[in-house]
Amino acid sequence: MAKLFELRPPLAKNASLVAVEVIREAIMDGRLEPGQRLKEEELARELGISRTPVREALLILQTDGLVEAHPNRGATVRSYGLDDLGDLYMLRAALEGVAARLAAERATPRELAKLRRSCDRFDAVAGDGSLKEIVRENLVFHDAILDIAGNDRIAQLVRGVTELPLVYKSYLWYSPNQKLVSAHYHRQILHALEARNPERAESVMKQHVFEARDVLVAQVRASLAASETAKSISGGEA
Image (cartoon, rainbow, N blue to C red; front, side, top):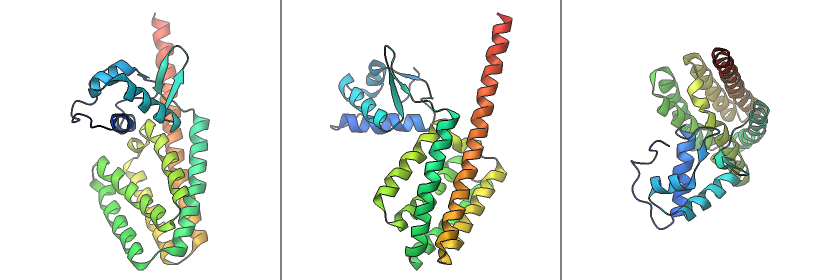
């Protein structure tokens, strides 16, 4: 395993909880890929802690759906099939749709102004911003909707189903045109909230989520096909 955490400071007293966040971050940004084995001894050495908090961290991440355990193989970064990804986005669309509906009923002028500023920033970074800026501003917008909706249970569930597809680095597959499409959806959601139109807000949010799903599923399908082709060629040359 390549060095994953060398820039991290030594872990503090709550070692298992810090290990959860460090390993989660490595999964989210692709340093640990779907299907990759997670060896307790190597992770402990990388993090400078004992194996016990690493084991506890992997159990927590297993509960979160980011890690899975296999008999005689130990833990790996969880892989999701196309049907699984489709189900996750269907759930996300339903939940974020409800959140947008609630936000349209509850948003204050100050909260709408915050969303408007986020849309302005997203328009700017969608044109020539860095990937990191785009991802961050997208999260700012969606998190703001959840905050305005004011339902902690929905927010918790949404953040769970939003995090899992990021294992596949779905944010890397947006073309310049698709970034502009996302910016357009953000603006339309804002307009629905400003108009106090819950039905429109819910509908546009669902369309926005399903658009993201279609991009991710298409790219994963293409990656799987390319992998199978490479295996076939390799097998033919052997």
